[in-house]
View (cartoon, rainbow, N blue to C red):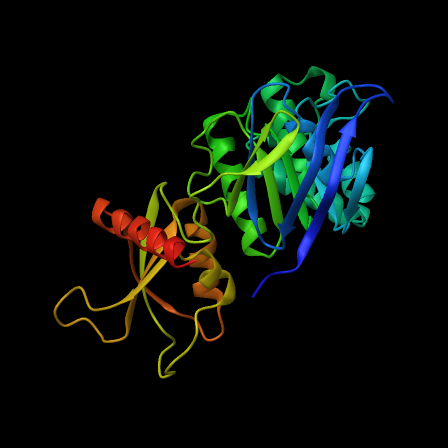
Length: 312
């Protein structure tokens, strides 16, 4: 069953000036709710233009854009010379996104802590390093739980812990039903997690062929062994967990283990979210063991995804 689209582009084109060359032409693209979508292409091919159209920052020269979810955008270049401190800017942006001022300030503090920038909360933006400025840029986009998150090279300039935190934030957004569209120069960024990858070539947009949908995971995965709620038979996995799982199997690994064990293979960036959902479900699930998936398990996931793609 096809999901609703958070935003859709139909026959969209964009050029600058009445006689300027077309940067994009005849673009048809739908971003499903809850999807993670990657956009690729060389420098100057129109990736950033496409992201600005999706985010509503730019308007098409032709065609139509439908759907306007609550959207947050991280641009390739953050205008750091603004008359705010880091926490002041985030609080202001939270209010712009519709949060009450007290809520905006609380979330600003929380996101600065998550990205390891809480020590710079009262530092003027103009005095922040490029890396710290980028943490603020990313934090402002996550303050109000956007329905559509658009990231243009958002990982660039972040240190390793902050890059990992942004990976987790992306996983949290999609697990909660939000859509994320991103561009990044690292070909391994969120590898295996994107539902679709598109390439901008010339002025056209084309979907990468041979790509699995919601099931392929070539990146690091975690194996989570769980048992359903005590005394309750046939309980379905919580929806956010089911959405994140790329492989599921029944079985007992160790002699004497209780029956009904489920072995869930989950992309590593989603593992924290999956564990929280399992443990906070009502009634809660019992987590037996968590460990890195071995090479055989990852190969099995890829084989299963390839088989699914052939069937489709």
